[in-house]
Length: 340
Image 1 (spheres, rainbow, N blue to C red):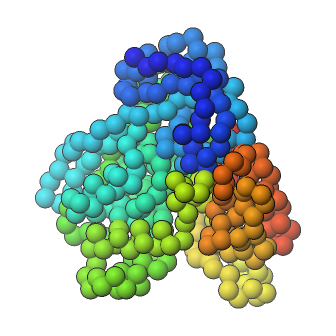
Image 2 (image 1 turned 30 degrees about the horizontal axis):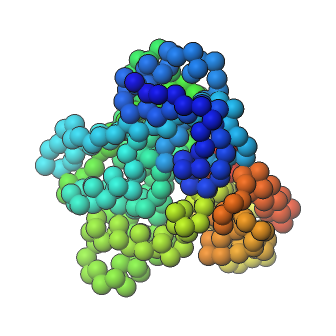
Image 3 (image 1 turned 30 degrees about the vertical axis):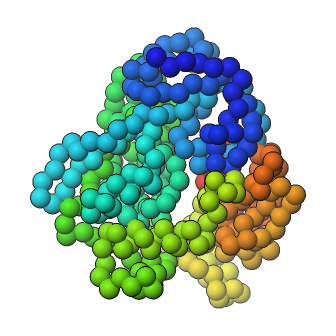
């Protein structure tokens, strides 16, 4: 049974390090806890927010509702053969620790997603991705609880409606389902490696890896991310604040004619995906600091809280960045972070 507390600080539960208070707060450690909570009067009469690792949320004010920390843990092999393994992971497990577990087993598929903060349950919701790989490529099923009935529903990969940092859980199924576990299909041999994106290949060579392997890719990705991105335990942040926008080819060509260094690569539906970090940097925001908040000095896509900053100020900064990019490039950046 989960205990519901009142007036709890959410400072420990968001990586931006924003000190706001939730009217009610509880921790779910099992599906049984969740079902019991769903039938409670506090749950039914208040707005809700589910928290995993708290790495993709910006609180701009106190939360006048029920904040629910999901800690449904556990890992189990559902089935395996000589080529693949189906690994079921509880939604509350750490994503990075899960990746490290698979790397230790030499199972391939998510090594490029090393060191991404957050929980396993949030991974399909965001369709997390990095260095040429998205989680949708290894999703077999997502198990979720229907909040209205408490019944379990199994979503297949296709039913998740994955897109770029998108899924059904951010739209049609939002606030209707709670993800309880995720089952991944991972390779045991004949791995399909992806080292074409970013500096993965070069970093592997620098580290002395002469052969491509699950472990080599993971170590390279971790080194790159640590060199570019601030550690949330040291500086409050939620990773990439904006999505990389996809634009029409004529707009891309126009910007490229004036800015030859514009990074771009093929996106969905014939669009071209361009770097949000590059756009922000061209507008002069990289490294800018405003009292306790700012834009990270090494990665313009990351907004930071140096300590004591408030979420409303960070959101105001984000909107100023959004406005300046639109004015200069006629591109509207969309937040990747959930703003509450």
